[in-house]
Image (cartoon, rainbow, N blue to C red):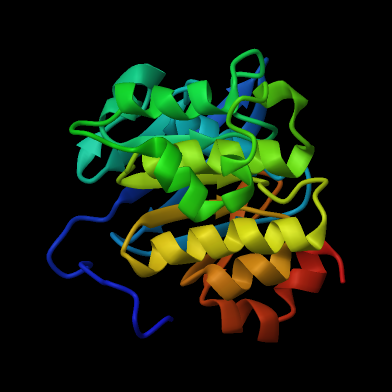
Length: 244
């Protein structure tokens, strides 16, 4: 656990608590009695093979899919089966798999939309330049014409600059070159060190374990192990559930 990370876990309720969450799609069970906690100010990695239910977990938290049973609390407030806009108003930001941008708007217009989601003034353009300098060179360009890595930078910048209390990031590295992945994880690490709560779904296992304080491993819709990153590496769970 990073020693310089700001911690409020003793004074604040967890950023996220999931108790016995079950979700089905068309009669098929996707999650079965999942329990998961993101302590306030911590980074939790949710790992597992394709189809394990990782993205479904994030979608249930953010209100994009309904749960069959169980409880979801964000900073002590129940949100299970609330509409997505109500969950977002509690400070939850979901960066979905793929590119969470408006492709027909310019980069600057995408960034300026952050001001509609936060209280108080925010200079999203300057903030984005600081996070990812290349975006400052693309302000007038249509977001949909950016490279895949630049689109992911724009998506993450929008999310981070919205000042969420909990950010959930789904497969941010998918299809990107390692140098781009490193820049994205550097931005997440900077926010983590300032105390932002993060739930991270990621197939780039080494990067996820380097960033995380705690790790949950999902397989076939169930939590099969929980621990700290060193435990997961030493216990062989990475190779057992994710491949060597």
